[in-house]
Image 1 (tube, one colour):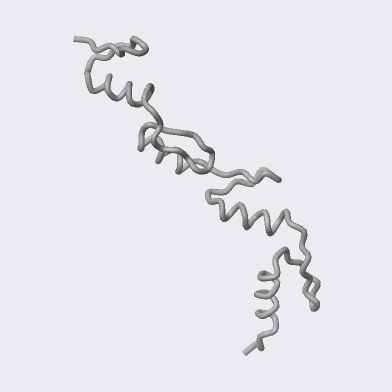
Image 2 (image 1 turned 180 degrees about the vertical axis):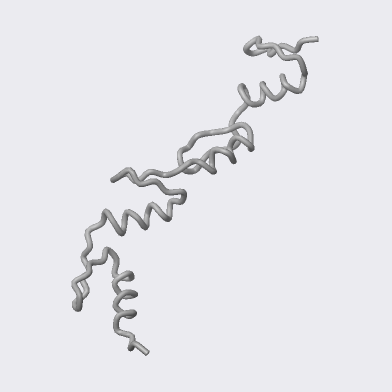
Length: 110
């Protein structure tokens, strides 16, 4: 016995395959990637996609798994470095980074 999809007329040998087809192909998407906005009907395909999906820096071709890593990269590489160490002239994009660097440099060496 064959089971036919009433939407696209594709046929299946098992009813479970037809159900899966209708849900996967014609159903609404329940899983959405927050990195690239691609949508998935099946959790297994969504999870598989998320393992591989990367966020590309908008200024260069660098790829990252997490948005926080992209933000850190942009701040370190693509942002003007306004804070300059008065001792060695190393430059920093954020005051907090400079402050952490400066406090480590001024600690006495044991």
